[in-house]
Length: 330
Image 1 (cartoon, helix red, strand yellow):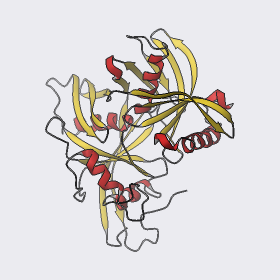
Image 2 (tube, helix red, strand yellow):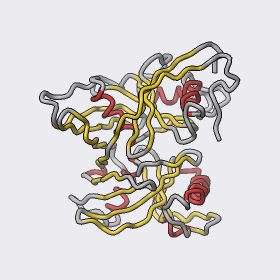
Image 3 (cartoon, helix red, strand yellow):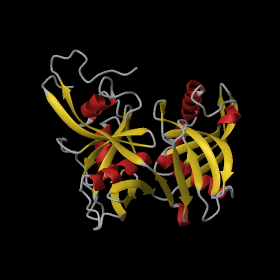
Image 4 (cartoon, helix red, strand yellow):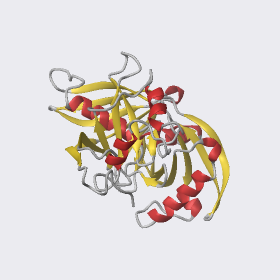
């Protein structure tokens, strides 16, 4: 990071417990005609956020995702122009290891932010639903912001169509050999029952769940796996099935939410299995007990609904005399 004084302002939200840090000013130009092309630029020459020759945003990504300003589980987005005037804006999703192609919880947070800040106007009276169209690297998605009595009460994320890539793929781990399912919902997710590995989706089992997720991801290099969803069954609700999951994404990060785009992947697989019928709703619970609900529409299109709240507005400063510079990771 440059040793000159630098301040960057952010607005932070969480969606079902997972953080999302929004940067909408003072960004360097990012070459590219589309958000997908700008992501390729942001990745750097080697195609990775950890490339020795990083992209033009990487110093800033490290500053905001590392301690003491962030942490290993931090997530965020850089606001960029949309692909065309059919969307309100575009976003480059980032985390400690680089730049992702999709982020459902971030899309929810961005929808609330756009409406809360007036970037997307609300109807008069301030009640009802406000669609926010966002270009992300995997395509165009919509966050429908639900408003009542002058405040945001929830957000529904409509994703690009999800599709199954493979079923019952055997993977050998130190926990044993398991069959996994693979789906693309803007990013590639592997689904595996946690109990097939001898694990429960609980906080005490998190270290082992993370280890299992990393092993499974490493065993499937041809699929460009972004996240591994370790799930378990809960009692059905009157509206449909219920599951609890923990999603281990990137290099061993834990999604505190039920994972928005990961929920899309679960929905298309449950639909194929006959576990989720048209009109039914999946109650999807996270390892910390927060909930998204999901529905499968025609053609693999999914809708995921949850809550999101602003947690702060920040002005992060880089002191040129600070030996830690952009920070560190533990």
